[in-house]
Figure 1 (cartoon, rainbow, N blue to C red):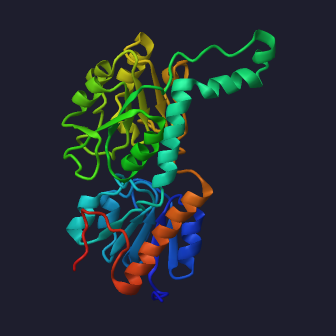
Figure 2: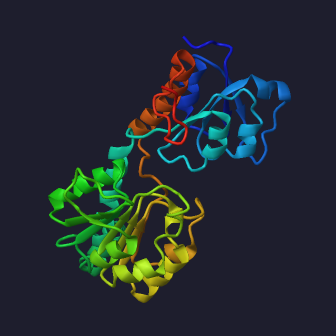
Figure 3: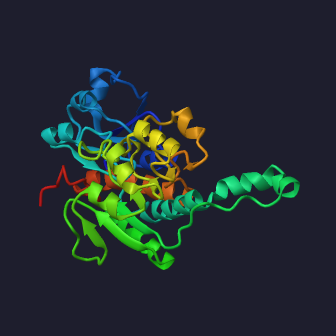
Length: 320
């Protein structure tokens, strides 16, 4: 069992199951999430692990002289300054795989909602307009016969592709390097993928290369029958360009679960009739979030028990 004197820092909000699990093994030091770590030097020296949901900047990492491991809640860990952790020899872990199915399911649901306008149709019924005005208007789009391109064919992207196969759509993808274990068409650039397909699903992490990679040129290449779905990172899409493209018919519709400045969503997006919007809920089910919380806790427990984390990120590899 891990040493009970080990102290784990928990900055700000995190799934309460994480704290419940960790409290069985460690001392917990909960602090507000802010620009600076406001604890005494003695408390900082006692902390050897961090469980975090969201950002952990370099100055926080540098303020913890005996830090050994950071367990990040989520498959994406761009909020953690991994480079700063790596320089210190601090291991960073994330929560891959346990949320793949939920996010992939949500991506398909969001795609169907977007092309068939199902949320709007339900609102029509709930408002009494079906009985008062007649049937909901025919949806201008359909999933039938579409060519779907996926930006990012990692763990979640591959699950999305597999779920798309029964819908009898054509599937292609863009990654930096083609995969050898799939038969989907690979395009070397995002603009080439957008030119070839009429539906683009984005599921990539936040990196310098992906920030605003879906820009006005990509949207124009996608075309007037085009549909954009984003369940990856809000920063991938140039929201100003997207709003303009949706307004002027450059593309037909969009479905978004993530946004550039969450939880703030541009009113111009909310006002558009040809979008389906979700408040970043792709992995937000109790079973999936419990599994993510357990993996955060299990990573820290494993590290302080065996000296090895369960799911370290590639930038902070463990010694053999």
